[in-house]
Image (tube, rainbow over all chains, first blue to last red; front, top):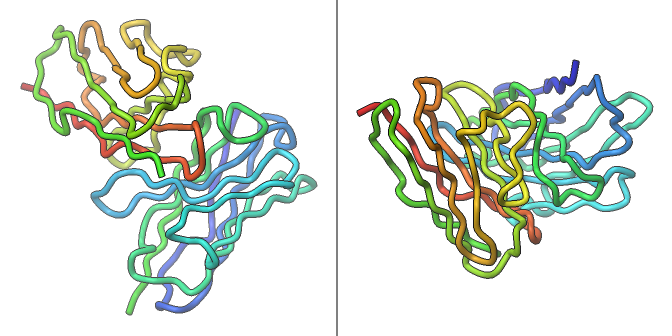
Length: 121
Length: 107
């Protein structure tokens, strides 16, 4: 069964850090790009970051550049998002999503249930 | 960055209606466009990719068309389970962007 499961969210003070994880199963993790997408309460979808199938390329949204880092551990079938210097506007549900392609410009066919990050002031 | 403008942002329709949602890109994106459906409290679900390719398992009443800057998602006969919010997404260049969404509600 194709599955991605996020964890690591919670309530955190502004300026602090958090590491989100996404455990995948049911498909060959090493063959596909992976993404993080977030959704603030009551708002639309915002793409956050991508990492290519082999980890050699990463791109971030401008809004998180320099603060968020995406990475992957193929041996653990796990995707990560290190989020630093958190701000109120980072409050959102964070989704992990699998790309249909290796480099990250396909579409997102498998999504997790999301993990909520709430930044308090 | 490529901006995507969806219209309408809100749509009221009845079961059985034909529904069309449009997505306009601020610059040409070939056919690097996807459509997603999202229901409250749930993750988005991929419906269409490459502008017109139906994702496996998605009912054939959903279809997509367009290229360049103008795209459409059509639901040929709206079903009760189709009431949701729909988003387009461009995958032509980074940063990837989503449209603002179209909420489809029951008339």
